[in-house]
Length: 364
Ligand SMILES: [Zn+2]
Image (cartoon, rainbow, N blue to C red):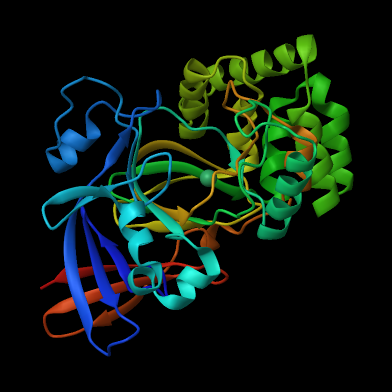
């Protein structure tokens, strides 16, 4: 999946073309992967069993299968009968296994492939650009903030473009709605505590205006925040025939009192059909709400949160990393390039400014 890399991860298997510098021959190997399953609380208990017949003997949430060489969940492969970490195997001859360019540029397998099974929503989040991640990581390193600190924003100096491919109906948020939609919802809500903010956005329908609105909303605290969320839920309760407000009530059972409950009214909210794919760009707020999908991303852990989370939120840092411009709805889903041969059809999802691509092949 990495464009310049001969290593390819297919489902459960790693397909590896090993190129030795001293010879012109190329050897191709298939190694079955033994993958880590992360049991995050929001994960589904049943999706992996239903889709892939994978057991769940411990009856734990099965949130994510990780396929790759990330230190927090490295796959294992059997090499000549001995099980070894994929990262150790790559380390035995990185240039031959990853390709010389990839080894020199990244020094590691530069992407991580996941099966993600969301039963509950994950936090609304933004990933920084490469330049923002480098600057933020350097600043926190210089300040001596431990990598494990709960308030640490930058775990590494990398950006984290993500692509998700739906295996089941997959509900998510991605990018800002049009100004007219956002204003329409907030006019409908008519929450007195927010009327000044809404009037400012109405008068300033620009990137700066949306940035100020989003930042101020996420910064609400105490009684004002509580009153706003309560009024939002009262409105949703009275309008639960509407899919969007029904969704909002479901989110409120998962994250009661959370300021992120306003996010479906600010961000594009959609359900992908199985087979649909979308790209989550840097600096763009997004959230996964429910469903199972394949996800590929750069090897990074940098997440700035914007609600639907009990975890640390750094609103000024989040806002500085967010491009507050609406994302047109017809640009959310990725249209694959389709190449058909007599026996197969290849769907290629290529994303600009990204180190990876994804392709799907079907046989006739
Ligand atoms: Zn993300």
